[in-house]
Amino acid sequence: MLTEEYGRERCETIAEYIIRTKDTVRGAAAEFGVSKSTVHKDITERLGKISPSLSAAVKSVLEQNKAERHLRGGEATKQKYRRMKKN
Image (cartoon, rainbow, N blue to C red; front, side, top):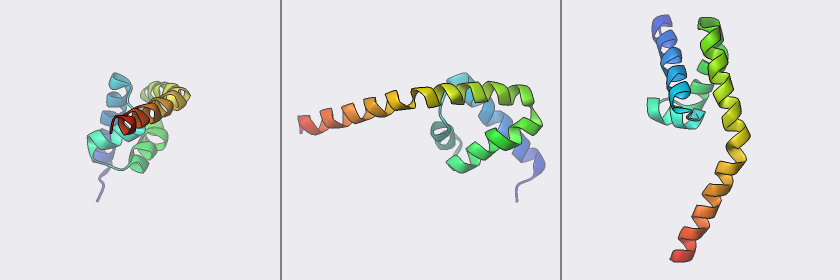
């Protein structure tokens, strides 16, 4: 069962990681071994109640990631087809 202290600690740890690395929700989920849904809920709902200033900083990183998402997706597709062409 999720204890309140563990939940608070996880939210803050994930938030600090995202701010430090500018990683995505998916990347943070992989790093901490939890689902994307858990990370998203932690940083969008729970974190605001725990630490509004930390929440605002994470929101800024996530908005930047969202704005750049189409660029990363295009780059991944380009690399995929380059690999296919080599084979």
